[in-house]
Image (tube, rainbow, N blue to C red; front, side):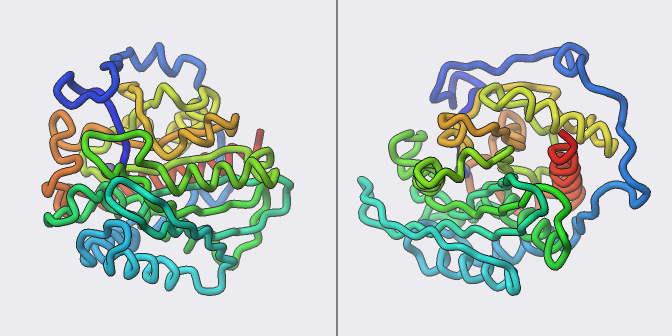
Amino acid sequence: MAIAAVLLSSACARSAPSEQSAAPAQVHASVDPPTPTDSAGPPEFNASRAMEYVKEIVTFGPRPLGSKNHEKVENYILSHLKGVEVEHDNFDINTSEGHFPVHNILAKFPGTRDGIIVIASHYDTNWPLRNTSFAGANDGASSSALLLEIANQLRGKKIEGYSVWLLWDDAEESMKLPWDDPQSLYGVRHLAQKWQDDGTAKKIKAFLLEDMVGDADLNIDRVLEGTPWVEDLIYQAAVNVGYQSHFFARQMSVVDDFKPFLERGVPSADLIDLNYGYNNVFHHTTQDTVDKLSPKSLGIVGTVTLETVRLLNQR
Ligand code: ZN
């Protein structure tokens, strides 16, 4: 996974500590009361099925670039996208660790409106930890599984609104630890450039990134780099479905997959909980295992994501 950064303490910071505690009332002052959803109630999301997907992905073991396990998880994702329009974005990279193929996987669900909502997660695991038992249950598997379950909810339905594109991006993790900006985020950097060149970037209404979304002790952070109105909309969505107590008690600075899209003016946000274990101690360690996760957390983030999509279509 990825990411980055953060700053929970000077010991693990690779950027200046910038965590800020903010009174929730201040941060969310502009949020409206819950807006009524339609009679069908909140969006559907099968959390226990998403949790099964997490377990199955973790069973492959470490999934670093160029590995057999990486190929297995690619095939696993594709096997869940039967009947869906899938686009492959394949290219090669040269890194200080060698030459690798990179495979972004995109599933497209066409909508009735002109415009695209992208929901993304990386699926690779960390190269520097490739020879350990690190299998990224939260870092990579949780968000990849969440997208698979969103695909289940979208498959075969007429999407009344913007098209939804689900992106499993590759080579997100840094080739070196601590995090090395030039040697990370390869998949999204490639795709953001491609979409800028072919005009797709202008059609993206919002880029929603999922990362570290399975922690049983779920506290999604407000990310300072995120586009403020998209972050606000996520909080509004959380309020609408009654999960706001899990959102935005903290705000912090993060380097993550949304960066190349933000740099190109695409409205973007990151649904991430970077307090995985006290002071984020499980992140990028062999302690990142399924027993730390909860289907309830996947359900909360999945439901809020789908509600955010609904709100994006109301704007
Ligand atoms: Zn990571």
